[in-house]
Length: 165
Image (cartoon, rainbow, N blue to C red; front, top):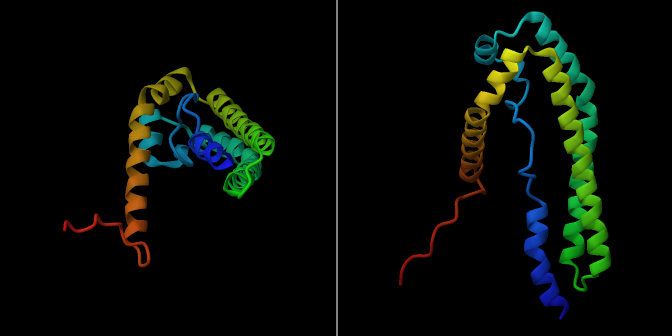
């Protein structure tokens, strides 16, 4: 009975580990306001770059702590789900704690975007909104490239399909 509950709860727990799809405008990754192509495309001024740096610096340490809290709570939930005897009340509490941690991280990111938006002109912000799909695609392409490099590293050989008998 407990094993059946565990097997039923596992997909839900894995879905909880995925990032939320209900997000605000997707910003380019990293310190995008320093990239020459982005600076040129958005016509970001030196003053804007400095102010964006300040917003980023103000939030950077908090993001590290908030992300670490999400990671710790993810481990807590995984440990509970991996236990021999799964306690639904403990799993529910750990799941709730994880969602709250994710909420705090998401809110901090949103507020940083709000601060950054206040530095940009309406035209610059519109370009960011209009280019979000392009930037998302570039980020996904980069992640696939990085994952491919990891798989090809020693000790990380890609899995191959078994030979046909």
